[in-house]
Image 1: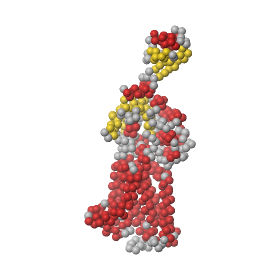
Image 2 (image 1 turned 180 degrees about the vertical axis):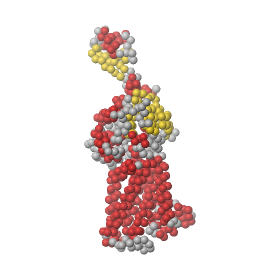
Image 3 (image 1 turned 30 degrees about the vertical axis):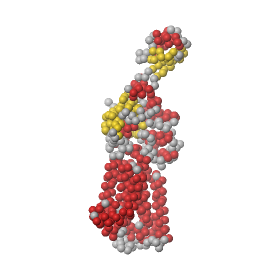
Image 4 (image 1 turned 90 degrees about the horizontal axis):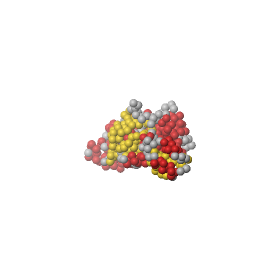
Length: 297
Length: 258
C-alpha cells in the first residue's frame, strides 16, 4: 500500500480546560486534494497548526512516512502552508519575500519566476508588500506555500480575499499541481469551491472527525431530480405517478430519481404514451445541505 | 542552520532601519569628533578617542531595538509561522537570530572602530601617538581603546541576553526594549545603593547588574573597590550570565506555541 502523504492519529489538543480536538485521525493519500470541512471553531485550524508543529498536541503525525513532532519536524521541509492569514514582512518586496523562503538550490530563481507567472503577480511583485491589497497579500501567502514545490500543501481558507478571477486561477493552479502529484489539505468555508476541487473530505465537528469520505460518495447521497418540460406536463406527471415514480412537481414535471430509476426508463414511458418531450434537465441536491446534514447527524 | 542564518541576515540587511542606523552612527561618530575639536577646552582628546567618541553608547540602544525586534516583529507580522514551519527546530531558529545579531553588533563595532581610527588620521587634534599613555594607565592608548571596546562589547551582550530572554518569553518587543534600556540606565540610578549593600553583604557582588560595571572598571581600576570584583571575575561573570540568560531564552522559545 502506498505511504500516506499525511497520516494523523489520535490527535488531541486542549486549550486550558477546553478540549479542542478529540482523538482526530485521518489520512491524506498522495496526489489527492482533501477538503477539511467544519463550522467555525470546529477545530480545522487547530488540526492544521498541530500538523505544522505550530502548537503542541498529543497524537502521532506522519508526513510522507516521516514522524513529525512539535520539537522535531524535519519532515516539514517538503510541506508548504498558509494558515489563517499570510505572514509577510511589510518592508520586503514580494519577490524578496519569496527569495527569503525559497530553498537555496540552483533553480531557485526559476521557481520564483514560475510561481509569479502562475499566480499573475508580475505587475506588483517588486513593490513592497506594505502597499498590497488583501487579495495581493493572499496570493503572496499562497506563493510562499508553493514556491519550494512541496509534496504536501496545507491551505487554510485559501480563497479569502480573492476576486472571482483570482479564485478561478488558484483553483486551476491547485489542479495543475495535483496532476503533477502534489497532495493538498484545504479548509474552506466556500463549499462550492471545495466541491470543485476536493476528491476526499474530512468533516470535523466540535474537534471530532464525524466523517471521512469522498466527494463522490457524499454527492451520491444527495437526492437527484429530473426536470422535464413536455407538451402535456399535467398528463406526463400523472403517467409517471401511475408507473410508480416519485413526482414532486407538475409544471414542469419534476421526478426524484431513486437508485433503481434511470433517465432512459422515464423518457421511454412518456414517449410510449405519446408525450412529446421538449427539455430534460438534471438537478442535484445541495452539497452544502449534505454537509450540514452530516454535521447534524 | 546555515539557511536560517542566511534568512536572518537577509531580513536584517533589507530593513531600512539597519542602514539608517549605520548612517546615523557614521554621522554621530564624525559629528562628536568635530564637537571635540570645536569645544576642545571641554573635552580631553585622548579620553574621547579611547571612548570611541561615545558611539558604543548609541550602539547599545540600536542593538537593544534590533534584538527585541528580531523576535517580536515575527509575531507582529505573523511571520513566525513561516519561520517555524520550516524543517528547523525552534532552538535553531533562536540561535540563528543570536548569530545574526552577533554579526550586526560586530559590524557596528567594526564601523565605529574604523571611524575612530579615521578620526585620528583626519583631525589634527586627534593626531597623538597611539603608543602614548593616559594618566594612571599602564597601557598604550590603542590598548586602552581595545580593552574598553572589548569590555563594552561583553557588557552589551549581557544586556542583549536579557532582551532576548524577555522577547522570547513575552513576544512583546516594546517590553523587551524597555527591559534593555531600563537595565542600561538602572546601573547609574542604583549603583550607589548597590555598592553600599555589597559593602554590607559580600555575596551581593555576584548580582548581574554589578557585572554591567565591567566596561567602566577596565578603564577605571579604582571601581574594583566598589564592585568587589576583579576584571577577570567580571569577564567570566559576564560570560556566565550571558550563557545563563541565553539558555533560559532558548528554553522558553523552544516551548513557544504560535
